[in-house]
Length: 313
Image (cartoon, rainbow, N blue to C red; front, side):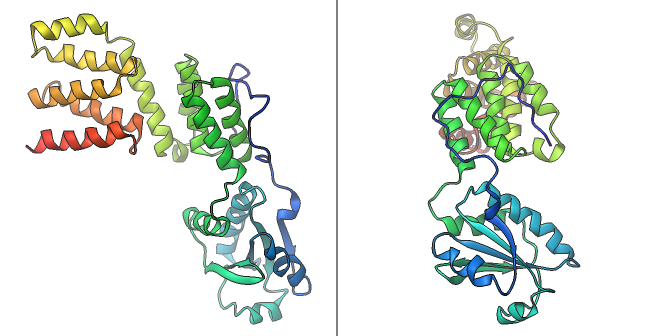
């Protein structure tokens, strides 16, 4: 998948982004053999962790794991290296390492094997291995993502857009970076461009939590634009607390102002008064807000607890 950043997108910042988020240098990934094993693995591992992939051309799972290892090592930006050993051409080394099944992955630090696994593994497990090896160090990709999120929260759309675009250069399918760039469009007032970008994503990426959260936020933003004035809706509720449509619309208007907790509280009130109103619309709207805010947001955590209390009391 290729993400094309529109020329009108928030520009890259001239400074402040972490360096090295582009493709890693070629020496991070290399083929080796028995004769060069000490020079390519043992000695380098005294300064940087080295992952060794024992594979063979006829091995189907190796063909799945190999590209994944290469991609994740490249994204680590020099914090870890990868050496590939063809066991058919290096049987004495494979016997010395007691390789009985492939793919077999060994991780070396300080000249010794310290971790590893046998068989093709999901991406999450390979990432976990790399994270154990690098500890608290953060790859350039992670640095770029964190910089983008911090800049976006601070309202610096240009810096955020540049950081997320840099992250996409390192990993074009990174859902967190794609979602971040979409939020930059939203912050710049171009919700249509954000939605257009997300709707074109492959189903696998579109279904990730990061992307569904932005899509939920876009839906809420569309509703908020038609909700009405907060003062007028509040006045309607003062005269008739059971005006459920006014309370629903007030929640959307409050959300548009960034008053997320107030918006959630209005919907909780509505669920308590009449859960079945408009085909359970208030509860569904609450779930959409929780999705847009994210599962770890304090308002989401508190709101879900309150919703459970209202529903099961």
